[in-house]
Image 1: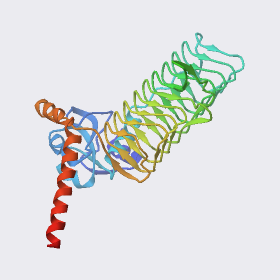
Image 2: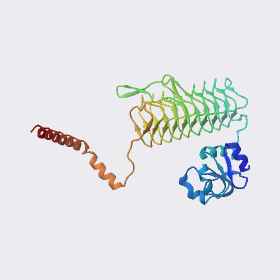
Image 3: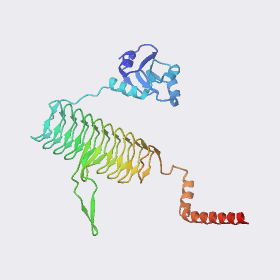
Length: 344
């Protein structure tokens, strides 16, 4: 479409250059005369100066730096996301059930839904309007999937799970598996039956091979707008607040409550039964072993360093307690000496 038309449809402003056609999106350093790219920040000005894109979305202050037609927006990344949807519309799956799908007679499926090859839909399942269930998915009994949600492929929805509207579940996601609950019987572990369920709100996205465990009793809750990356484990009875985002390889132990608008960077580990307040942000590989109810940014872990430095530091770790005790004795001796001098 014309750059001017695209600008209108994504809420941007056509700032400069000829009103050219764009047909696709491209990287800033690509050479594609019909492509649309974007500048996310001033750190990438070098790429902007050399770009071969047909048009670029950027912030207003960078218009003079661009060698091509420009669309300006206060949030170029958001405007670009909207442009991608327009230039690369998703092809919907055909409506109806594939002949190889196995659908229970008591399942209630909206006529506008799509059930792909080799899917299994069990008893009392409810599937809303516009839902797309891709190949190889399993939806177990008594589950419900809200309107316009999409299970891409090989997704498992375990019994009794509730999925909201416009939810996107990527390949291999497992929703509602039994939580990790066991009791000791001497030297043996006895499994505690998990009788709760999972409830997922609207506009949630859950990445590839991530798992959300059902509640042991009650619900595991993923609230509206939550975004969960690949390879993430959410334990039983966890609650994740609205619009929180979690990056890959993180794990949350059972019964922890995470507030709204939090961010959890990659490989963060959280202990169980914690309370994380609204607007809390954990940096990568943080080990969260206590509650953080005050909003803010929190970090832990040890940054990478040269191997020789690491080996020397590790060798000293075992002496830290001894050094701390010696320092305390020296501080006490200095304090006593000063007190003695003051009384003389």
